[in-house]
Image (cartoon, rainbow, N blue to C red; front, side, top):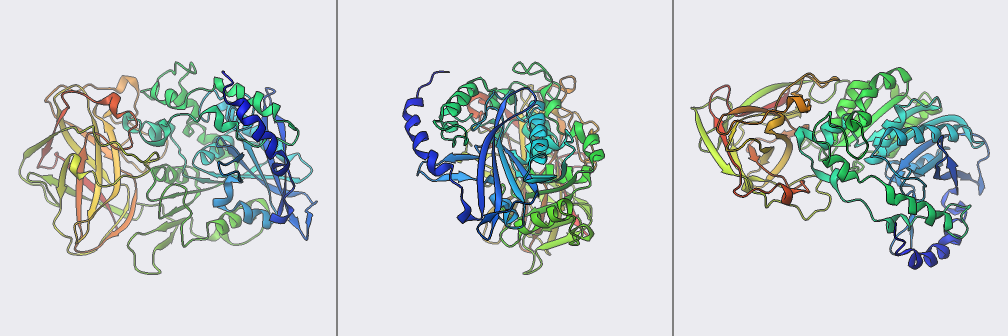
Length: 564
């Protein structure tokens, strides 16, 4: 790696050492840091936060909660302040106050850790976490009982580490991660969203705060130099079009390695307690519901977007109660409470939260809404017909993290219902069945369920995607509520015969919403989506022409889960 920028940053690194390494007893904790060697000798950067009471560090051994991050556990922001404790949004400070030690480490190849990252959440990283959990359990500050928590990547690293079954790991609290990496990152054969973003420059890692033992920052600079050999995350995902593709970057069927569904038997047998959390306006929510279903875990589904704590819910308190029960043995009643806490959008005041032992959708029945000529959507099949459009590739988003999208009605076909005569309570996974013919051998298809209010304002409630060549159905290797499952194997790929209609069955993201009387529903179908980062590579001239076949029981429709 060229060392451009090291000299510029060296002075800054030295300047922050004194403030960065100071004990912070005035904040309710003291911090220390060091490098810890894992089984292959790689040194990983570890920060330890111990609670302070009455001005003194708590000396008695305590349970610990571990976080494993690629986002730099401690670093200097552009304004000169220090960012640390990424678990604060989930209540890390509250856990410190409640008598837990918090430990946060950089994954190999990131932050201040040494080594190069072979792949995103691979088994090397998982075993690194295994070794660190056991290191934590063996320290004098620990009583040998460890939990893990995190959201987004940190939620994924939590599941991956748990799948190695460290003996000291007793409970995990996971936010916005996945159960099936292929079905999440390359759902329906289509890459989208943040999983394909560019890798951070090495200069970002150089802004990490050096470990206590690294007085002049030389170890940090040497560690970051090794990061130049990291595998490109986007390059990894783009290079594996099928679930059984062999990665040219890692030399194996990497989708299966990172699962994490292949490790379900080990997770079930481990006895590690699990709690899963995500929000309705976030793509991982579908995966978190499946994870809870397959691991008999607790589930929280709130309002809002990616990793945003529900505004009127004590998430930090829930995290503490969960760990208090499983790490401290405090009989606080959480294990006797209903397993699912679910937010209902548009519910009456003080009635937004449902507490139930059922998972989202298990109390619902499907009702079909049929697309008809003239852009109509109704509960009865209509006369047969067709409608067509040209794919518009000019839909890219200026939002770097386009976790959710605005209405896509202007970019494809729209089928709208008449205003509802009564409230409609939707809960679960909508399923779109799109009968489609194309003027070429393949095309991407995106389906959106939207709500339109009395003033004509549209909101996207759920969305799904599928490349037509990936339309083959199969049995999921885990419990998935009987929803359509696309194996995505190379042998399953079926090119289209131009002009010949086929049925595409697309599971949309889950909903929990009351659609008020007077509002309308609509099904929107497009051939491109703002979250695709490679739209310019996908652009075709002329654009594909997609024809939807309408009317009749075997034509285009959307099945909606209606709570009974």
